[in-house]
Image 1 (cartoon, rainbow, N blue to C red):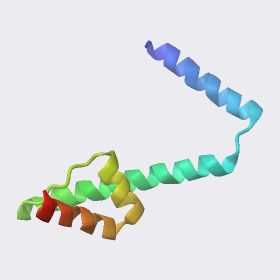
Image 2: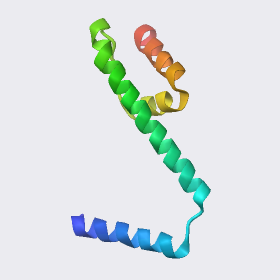
Image 3: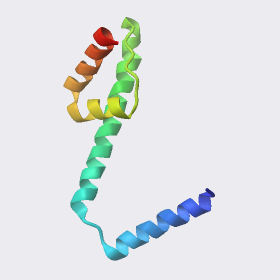
Image 4: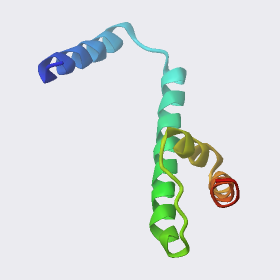
Length: 87
């Protein structure tokens, strides 16, 4: 797709949401989930950056970022245990 088409579609969707209105609660929940997944990916990045000294590498993908983002430190600990003992 051409970039101008994508920008036009996104602009049209924004105008449509502004005119019609959108339920705020589902949008807020999706936004919070997105932020938590990004934080989980960032935590996994730092785990991989500092874990290289002890041969620790947990792949960063949507599933592992979601687990670490939603569960926090216990989720990261679970991913490390799975990586060390099961894989």
